[in-house]
Length: 150
Image 1 (cartoon, rainbow, N blue to C red):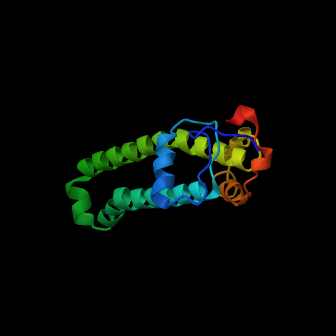
Image 2 (cartoon, helix red, strand yellow):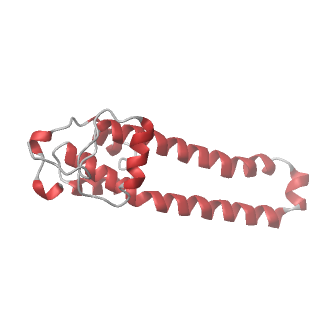
Image 3 (tube, rainbow, N blue to C red):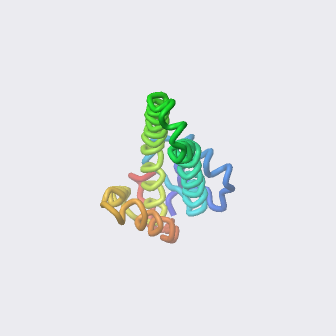
């Protein structure tokens, strides 16, 4: 097995806090390896973050749209709040895209695959939903680690 520097080695059995911490510490690090526990805890964190973001940003607008009196009185301010909410959500999603792609590449390396397979995430419909599950279910293969991935 290839000896790994600490910044490239996976963390098997990572706790949720450790996994999310490493996700942000290795923001744009496409080299190295990520264990399944690192990957799944971070996936859970991101799903909760996205769902929580949708609920916090968009549910108030949906609820206020059912009240015609409120809709007539402050339509322009409601539109401005919706636009600002959408911009915040877009900025957060863009800020998390690079570390997410890096995490997927490191997870693929841990499974003995090329990080370039991360590009499969961009396939419409199956990319964002099916491919991450496949990446997470692949077993770790330290016997297939390659020096250029470290």
